[in-house]
Length: 64
Image (cartoon, rainbow, N blue to C red):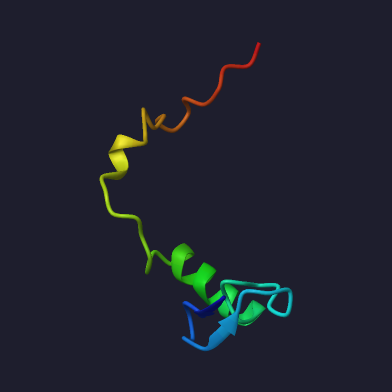
């Protein structure tokens, strides 16, 4: 099976030759990770749907 690296668009084969698949290399994998961390990529939707309640400062877990 052949596919394109999502980062650089290079044609690669889905095999053990490319251990970072679907990326062609570790470099392309890290570029993609950086884009997610830098919020250049995002999953559409309202983030508030997934957050029940964000505690205010000083309202952390209670210690017994």
